[in-house]
Length: 267
Image (tube, rainbow, N blue to C red; front, side):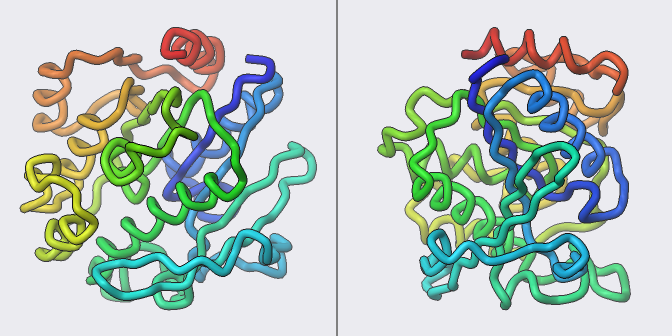
């Protein structure tokens, strides 16, 4: 893995958010690949529950200052960074006061999904890609973890398809069976359509459920990793129709070499 450039994009990650399978593996995978000599960059949203003082986040002025257009509205992009010193890892945070300042992650105090989670996902996807462009860093592998990162493959393959920085990048998505209840905003598909993305590419998001978000990620990725042992019947059936490399679930004790081999086979 030495010198292989891997971009990790995660919805959630320890130690910044509580432990889930997604947040734990979003930390463990880049940590192990970093130890193996890979060049890594890690991105996640800067949710308001993250304690900036404790984790020593600070704004990166040279990367901030862009505006992203989300559904015809200009939204300022703020980039923050923190370091996990003992692992020698730097984490980039995508921030915007309107979308991420609130003291919650995906749901309100009544455990209801935020109505703008769809826009937050679009902003996160576009924000990561625009920041990587500004870094002028061309990854060999782009590895996604968590449902809020599920639009990244779509935007790379469609909205940013003419950007030479990502021409040779292979997109790997890890799937986790940690669904949210219900669906995102009914207007989700129209907000993606505003970006000029073919409606056929996001037909599944006419009903923006957790499973349908995973389907969009799968369809636009180059390879899939099963991050958990089981999934809904709907996702299991969908995966059975996919003609792409799929790595079966590997435990935390055995994933490292399996992931390395899987990455190498994609490049």
